[in-house]
Length: 489
Image (cartoon, rainbow, N blue to C red):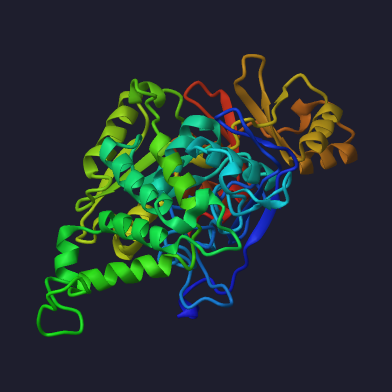
């Protein structure tokens, strides 16, 4: 029901002002990115979570469009009271470039020919997809993402984000995914592509405005959908039951329920997806290899995020062993990582269906948040030898109301606030030493945000300098950093 969701939402568009330089060296001229957002971005812009969609997903991850018969594809975990609580977090999801749900792809109009791109669309990679997403995040003026989350191909994007833009990701949750496509995974994708290319209506990708290669696309979807299920789930759902008959027909018509189900999946897919997009996106998945043919440990050497890697015990498309390889490589780099395995008979599709386990795991991971996870590390500070005028000028320049005062060696000496500056005018002080608070309430990077919030409430303050074991200032945390991230009483 709509009352259980975030309600009606709309897809927005952002067109890049510049060309997107692709990994192949080609350019995609000023592409458009379709995206949706839910919740409110806090003042510090520190509560943004990016959701990355799977192969045939889109930006409509939660809520309802006016014409919807069902909500967004991950509505089970996004919304008030769910693990991705829109009362706490600002959720972003964009359609990947190469897609067919609003972002520039092969069905989009080529600005040079004024016709659909077709096969003139350049080959793209997962790295290109996340670089386009970064342009969107930059447009939203978000310097760092609280978390990046996704399953399947979305999980690959999560990993690529952490490798390509390590400073921009605080927490990462890759689900039911891999760090590189295996030969078997590439093989399934290639069979799907051949099904499309072999359709006479494909016409070398030039089918727009003509009869569509629906038979080929439907067959590709049928092949792929088998890999999303487990043997156990297929037995539970279909067994060997016949479809609308009591006996075998002894011909090549549909006999079994499982056959009818696959036909339905294939036919319904053709109504919402573009064949060329399927070719391009599956090729991008095939090219995905964070190890570069070398060491996965080396690939993760610069990663900064803390991780929760989730697999599904019955997933044979991206089996738990591939998630464990990711965990081992991260652990070898001393990355903060935990591993969880969903117990489910659904197979790969469990990452879309297991609402209870996903909500429990993700809630636990995201609420286990420390000051270090949310603080501003490039905090504005001022030397203890500075004047009050210099402090006032810095506050105006940096748009802050609290300035940690430091000694020449970087150690904390005190803190001065905008109120202190105002007081100094009335009392005609000119030295920071005359007005700054010297007994400073501080936070440690390992403190929980709940503990930091309690200190702020107890001392009626809205900002805490963050110091290390040597009392060196390494950041600052404000009430706005955490106000939307702490459960309300």
